Amino acid sequence: MKKTLFLIIPTFLLLSCANNQIKLSVANTTSIDRTAETIEIPVTEITSRVPDADLKKVIVTDISGKEIPSQLVFEGQATPVKLIFQATVAANANTSYTIKKGSPQKYETRAYGRFVPERMDDYAWENDRVAFRIYGTALIQKDGPSNGLDVWAKRTDKMVIDKWYSEYLEGKNSYHDDNGEGCDCYKVGRTLGAGAMAPYINDSLWLAINFESYKTLDNGPIRTSFSLSYPPFLANGVMITEKRTFSLDAGSQLNSVTEEYTGTDQPFTVAAGIVKRDDGKALTGSPEKGYITYSLKDGISGIIYIGTVLKTGSEGIVETKNHLLIKTAYTPNQRLTYYTGAGWSKWGFENEESWVNYIDQFSAKLNNPLKVTYN
Image (cartoon, rainbow, N blue to C red):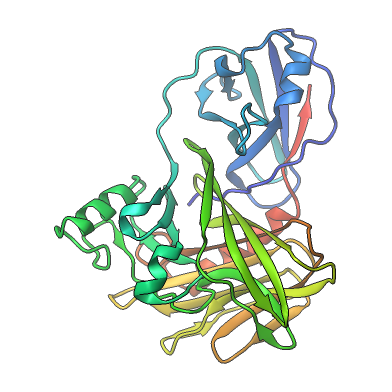
């Protein structure tokens, strides 16, 4: 099972002697094997070491000299800001990678997303482990408002959302049924769904409605990301606006989600939450480590597992009538990043223990990133 860490911060930067390549040492200081975790290299680190580099003609090789998939990340900008690739490093060990001039191969797409206007303005995205969707304003007239996060459980590493939508809209198959690749067997409604965030003020959640605009920022082969803007909504008597940025890397069960709220200068509490169902239950949670976990029957013959992880300090875990929540402080006009996602008992997570262990290790790796040294 692959595990991905979304944000890696380079440490000691030492100028390379070579003019046409950059040697990297990647160290794992934890007792956990790190498999297919995303390394982010700022473009400025490449251009400062290889000034004449054409960023479209740069490749990454592993310690054996084999080319591995890489991706230029634009984050919605006109020019790339990062080069990413995925590293595998054994516990308490290190390995080497090289960035050098070369013509990249055509890599298999392992992360993909898009706006889906043909299905009432959904935005759907996936990687080789799991899929998600979130709702646009066109759906309100039919189903009412919902700004929660939906899960599509997968048991294939292929990209399937375009196929599922096409077959659903043509009446060939329903993505609510498992036709061998997975299904949409998770119910959101007027809730946070699988780990969305909202202001939590005076012991109450204040929910926005569906997103009104989107921007695709990057789209594979390793990372897909996009931002959503929401109409102003009332939070404890104050009208605020919300912007969410989602990012999902190949191999990971969890999204990186960045929240930005505006409309007030007063700090407030926010909560990331998982909807509770009659056939679900809270699993192990840790306010100290900043995560909550939950399981529920999928309505077919399996179990969906949800996990939400904060990197910032937690103010505690709360169970309301409808949600399992983890709280944290928020300063308006700032960016707050957390992580949320899902697993399925039919593909990779045989029991509750395996899911809780995944989330616990994800939290540990988040707080102990791989260390990159430029040699």
